[in-house]
Image (cartoon, one colour):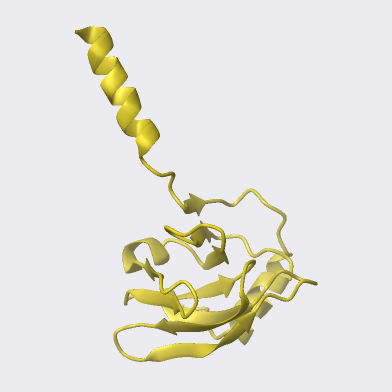
Length: 145
């Protein structure tokens, strides 16, 4: 019976898809003065703001980023192959932020509870992944751009 229970437990966890959410601060960072300047330029110094950064995988699709109050960004988005960044913008961490794109018709929601804990939220898109193309990395580290 114990072996059977272990088998069922293992089977359940191998059938579940892996999470597309990471929490990392262990990558190369810009200097503290550059980070402060970037946050100042984005007007994201306050506790209620984070910076959403679209990274790899955007190939010209129409991307819409919105919250309950308004559309924050709507445009054709292409990743810059030189720096790996497609777009960056300030988001309000008191409201859920929704990201959708026209090609996959999938959406990802940035929940306020998680967003408040991290200053930078990186969104990568894997177009080969049909179930959930978005990979989210929450961080307090600003990667070099």
